[in-house]
Image (cartoon, rainbow, N blue to C red):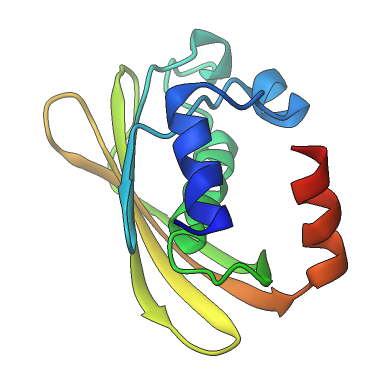
Length: 151
């Protein structure tokens, strides 16, 4: 198992501490993964509802970016890292209750990029939003070495 796969497994089993930004935004952990696929069930945080009592659209972007990252991690080599370079979101219906099922799928893995689609499904099984994103793949051995040493 590669280093990225270990990081995903540690996220799922709770053996890794969530980064402070994830804690503050209350976006939680991944539930399941396989190469090219990630799923999470996210319980709607009532603090993120807008005055119309639906999930603030920018929060959907935060959740999409997290799932983009974990989904792309499933196809990375140990010497690679990544950054989000593009994100587009289409909203089909409001999200007003949870848990929300969020799934990410790798659409294309190229040498320097990973394209990921993320879907948001309401508790009644309806598609609420779809995000598409491009992740730029970097060969960043010094950064990764520091992250591995940190734990």
